[in-house]
Image (cartoon, rainbow, N blue to C red; front, side, top):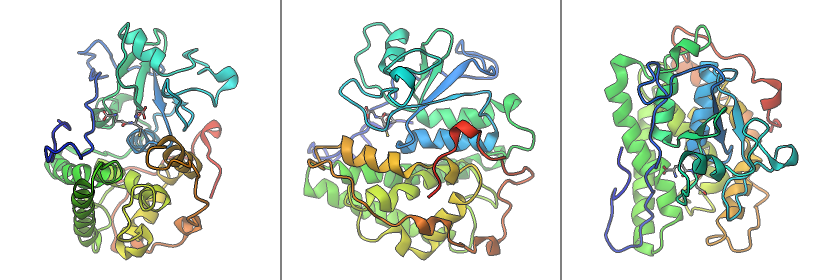
Length: 335
Ligand SMILES: N[C@@H](CCC(=O)N[C@@H](CS)C(=O)NCC(=O)O)C(=O)O
C-alpha cells in the first residue's frame, strides 16, 4: 500500500507517513530468502506503538509466542531511536544490541534512514528482515500457519478479504493514520481536515458496529485488530495530545463497548501497556508537548467494566478457541 501522497493538499502543512523501507517477506515458501521457521526471527516492538501493537495482538491470538520471541524496546527513544534499555545491561539478550538501528545497519551497511517498529530481525545474523508493518500481520495470519497453535482463529479468511481490505483502508486513512495527521498537522487547515475525516469515519464505523459485534462477518479479523490499536490509545493520548477532542471514546456508546469487548478478549488487553503508551507520546513528541509532562488521567478502570456485546452474538474465534494467558515474562501490570 502506498502511504505517500495520500490526501496531500500540497501546501506542506500535512503530516506524511514515510514508506516502510525494508519490505522483504517471511513466507512459507521462503521466496524472499526468509522462510517461516520457529525461533529464527525476533519481533522487535514498542508497546507504545499502534503499528507494532497490531503484531503483538496477532502473535497472541495465533499462539506464536514461542515460535516468534519478542523484544520490547524502551518506550522513550533517544536521538539514536529505539533502545533496549529495559533489558539487563541495556542490550537485547538475544541480538546483543543496544539500539534497533544496529539491526538496520547489519542489513544495510551505512543505513541512516528511519528506524521504526515493528521490525522482524533474524536472530542469528542480527539482520533486519522487514519493517513493513502493513504486510507483517497479514503474513503472520496466512504464511505462518504451520506454526499457529491448534485452534487458532483465521484472522484473514479468504472469502472475506475484499471486505476486510476495504474496511481497513478507510480505517487506516482516516483513523489509524488520521489521528497522526491531526496531531502532527503543521497548520490549522490540515488539522481541521484530518479532524473532520477522523470523526466522520468514527461515526460511520460506530453506526456499522451498532448491531454487529465485529467489523466483518461474525468473528474477529485483522480489521478489528487494526481498529482496536487506535481506539485503545484514544482517550489516553489522541484526545488530548493529538487534539482529537470532539468526543472521548468513552462518550461513544457503541465504540466504547466494542473496544472494551476486544480489550477483555484474551490476546488484546493483555498486550496493552498504558504506561508505555502515555510516556512515549507525551515525552517523545516534545515539539507538540514541550514540557514533556505526562498527564495523570484518564481513569482507565472502565476498560474492565461489562460491555454486554455478547448479546449481539458473534463467534469471536470462529471455529477456533481463545488463546491461553500470555507467557509469564510478558505479563503486563493489570490496570
Ligand atoms: N514508520 C513506519 C510505521 C511504523 C511507525 O511509524 N512506527 C513508529 C512508532 S509508532 C516508529 O517506530 N517511528 C520511528 C521513530 O519514532 O523513531 C512506516 O510508516 O512504515
